[in-house]
Image (tube, rainbow, N blue to C red):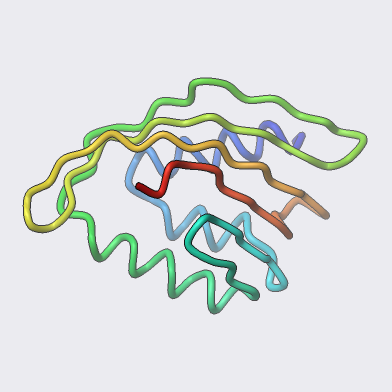
Length: 118
């Protein structure tokens, strides 16, 4: 399975409401996740952040992969995605982001998200 196929499976699982299952499968113990609001290091810290995000979501209405590309020589996958969700408290929004993932041995060791943090 290529890293692009793994990333596609990961986002398909997220789209089916299985974010934490995908996280456990595809993220390495030493993963580093960067985004506009900060950096987390290690799978445990990243897991807590993902669980907090899920805890803030009331309803997940859909996910659309806009584009994906792979640089297999560098072990990188780039994904542009839109998610439609409602946060607890009633505000519904469409979130657009780009993620750049660095894969090693079938797992993500580094992921950086680009989005407008508002």
